[in-house]
Amino acid sequence: MTNSAKSRRRTLVANSASFSGSFDLDEILSDAMDGIIALTGAERGCIILADDAGNLDFRVLRDGTSAANRSQVLDGANADQQFSRSIINRAMETGEALLTHNAHDDQRLIGMQSVAALDLRSVLCVPLRYRDDVLGVVYVDNRLRSGVFGEREKALLVAFANQVAVAMSNARLFNNLQATISEITQVKELTDNVYNSIDSGVITIDGEGFIVQANRAAAGLLDRPDAAALSGQPVADLLEPLVEPLAQAITQVNSGAHESSFEATVTFGGKPSVVLNVRVNPLVGRDVHGAGHVIVLEDLTVQRERAETLRMFKYYLPPEMVDNIQQIAGLGFEGERREVSCMYVDVRPLATMPAMRPQLLMEEVNIYLSRATDCIHEAGGMIDKYMGTEIMALFNTQLNPMANHAACAINAAIQIHENFSVIYASLGIDHAQYRIGINTGVATLGNVGSNTRRDFTAIGDAINLAKRLEESALDGQMVISEDVRAHAEHHPLPGIGKVEYHALEPLQVRGRQQQTAIYLVQPL
Image 1 (cartoon, helix red, strand yellow):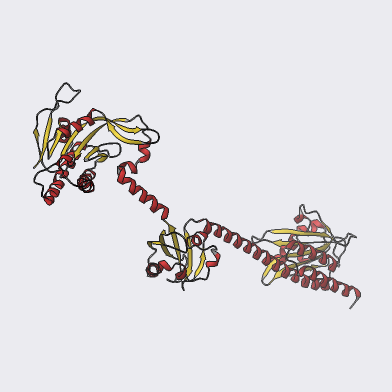
Image 2 (cartoon, one colour; image 1 turned 45 degrees about the horizontal axis):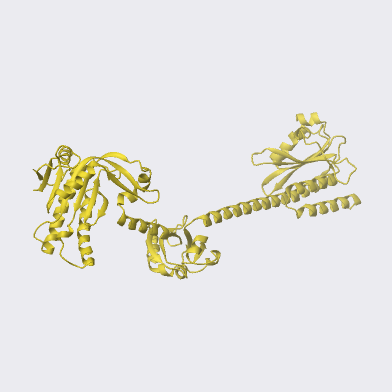
């Protein structure tokens, strides 16, 4: 073996070693191009890569005539015009090395315009093959001399190109793997962030009932400091107070249900008891029932406490006012003029009550007040206030609008009459002892009080007259004004029982010159 051949083999081995351990594609191609120039003694060369669409990318260009240790980079501008595109395309298409000692005389290259235009002599173009794929080509030429490259250079360059192709493939695989790992890491970080930002506790379990993952909210509900430490633990141990209903929910999901849920009040660790809504779903993407589940723990404690607070408020305030508190607050202190029907009920005057202890007296009064309240609410009325044994109720306020409000008020009075009759019978009372007065008219409805304490009520002559009618009634009487009767006849209430109106002596109301026609309501 000649010294020249030995030198080229050493160059081949050295350059192969220089890029075989690298995963930087540009570094591999740069080192490979320097090795190619050294192996072949070419005037210049380039490495061209093909993308998935078949487009050519001139990645590395070198001029081997420089006296420097490394070849010089050629002008990358118009690179495809500096080399024979025809020869490059042929090597790409055939996947075979192309060697010509003199391009001008080579019958294979006659008619190729780029060969003639570039005045090429010696050309060697070798494909970069990896398995069945052609990744690109290595192109070297000499425009001044013929016969620069022979079969030996061709064989060396083919062997070298194969090593370059393997290194390129490894680098691409490594870079793709790095990109995939980076993408997976980003997705996992995003998933973890989303998972931990969910206010509800989320626990995923496998088919054996062991925890796969849990978020921070779940760890907080379970009084555990570290969500990651929950992985691998039996869910039955952590959710011990929920074992039975949880097992039933999982069974329902395994039987084909999309979701199963239940509520429970439980205590975990040293924390106060919590109200949980527990939902169980199958893991998305699982084809086999029972292969895994998602358990969502929604803390309803605050909601239930608020609901209980609202429920308690409704004991002391009209339910309609609690449900529409923002609307009422928006009225301010100006009020609103509105036609309403107002009812006053004295459920049982204290003078008719037998002598008894105050506690017993309060209990008996509340029996009547409770029954009358139910009747008013069922008829659509709103309790304005309680005054000892008396109730003031309103129909057709902003909170309970109704077209037939006078008929609804009469209906409430009839219901009170019927319900009280049952109470009288149970207590052995032989005559009715309630008094009811109803009037219809325009009143001012709004807030009264101060900025720190206020009530929603109605004021005006129409309200005062209702009170006067109740005071004028005898025991067991329901007294209404002419306006109530007229409104009820023009806007009747379907389904109400038949009643008769008996005219009473007109009522002289203070502040009014004319007497007020009034009627006694008599259910048939």
